[in-house]
Length: 315
Length: 315
Image 1 (cartoon, rainbow over the protein chains, first blue to last red):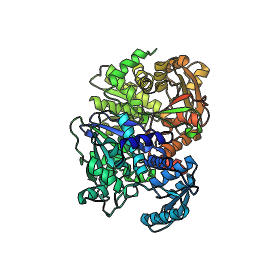
Image 2: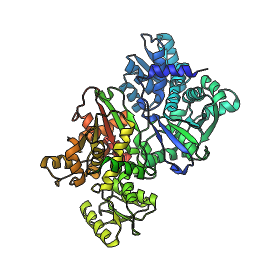
Image 3: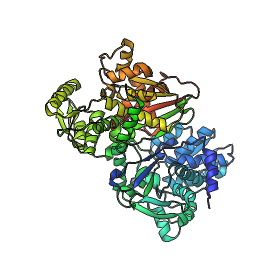
Image 4: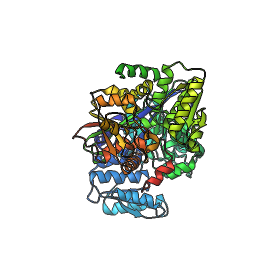
């Protein structure tokens, strides 16, 4: 299992390449929550999500073949891999399904990546990327189920631990589980790490219930970021030891959290980035009086038009 | 003149009511600027701008008549006064010109304020508010030219000084001058405080050139926040001692700073909130190698649709 020492090493490795993102402690009774809420503003990370941490860590921990890097993702992971490869001077080939919106393809290209549009869905693009890597010898970077990736995301746990003292609880959104796996590996039993998933993408919730990573149907507004069909095996093992529980939130609760972040704090996050907060705002997570609750805002890759149309009010 | 002790007192007075906003130190060579850029994220303050500081300070420093508070502003100042009055349990009457957009009126009402729509422009609304205050006995809160207001905004200087060590320079947007007046009063000659104004609203620039606060024509995209016609006398005096210079930036440079804040950092600011950064990004301010340059992002009260339409690219 991933250790705190592994995460220390990762932090030293990626320190010059990723941003230390700020935290913000909210005022008492913010949103009428009787707890001390501390937001970790990871949406300000390079490429707009925490994914840069894992991408840099894997690239810096491995020797990179001449054929470079391969990944499959039209979303946050793909952008992070493309960006990290560009910064480090490696060739990146990113596989996306044929249905990938052109703005996402353009974004990958803007980071210098070669984009391959293959397959009807993510699973097919992933298979194509693995076949290509087997042939070219390029290093694959998985979206969540590789030790260096989970360890890299774990640097977020280390960072928040250095910024905030005496955290009781940390709420973390879960897709494939790279982030919560790394964070739970850092904190062990020191902080209660609680996962939050959309009701329509309950990968870790189901895995813990069933006792093994299990395929689930996924959908809903956060599916582009949290829509892995099955939680990673690395995270599953960590989670059985160190994730206290996984809460489920509705799409409406996620939308409401996005809206309140804009209206009360002038912060923009994507649905997946608001999912952890949604558990607190919807009452799915009910803190104790004066509990110090950390909430990770983990991504902001959304179009502003989308956000505006989801909100009922203007400022 | 306002002293550091006055600002200390203000900070103690308003501490329970305003947020400590985060800072974010950018990576080396961010935006290809050869300096250490530190952003102060004051756009996350209550009501989305620094104005809450001055509003709370004046309300908490004075005894409030039964008739409450009066201010004139449909913008950031009005919202801050309405919010502070609501939090402190005072009646607030806010005067806005008849042309004030209904969304801004609604926003003031959402904070419990009584909104009076009077006059063809801000100047007429201000005159009406003063006449009303003379009659009702309510306490007026000026947008920038009152000691408690300038002192309250100065708490932002104190706060950044506690968050960031060894700042060389601080770039601050200027409208009526309440913010830069308070900040320059805090730092004195310890940090080079530099004002930034839109070319089309050069109030402090003109005043320092002419040697006295002077009416100027104002316009441009930041006019709703930085469009005071004349800098306050309190700030003018402080500025003659402690503001090193005032730089002017174009509307295009402001728009570009807004766009880059979204694209590279996923932050939304209004034009006035991006004006200080525009001086750095446009090269109007050229830092020394390794200079530690603080930039205050001071407001985010913009509609997302407006931002989106100003940007050429999506994410």
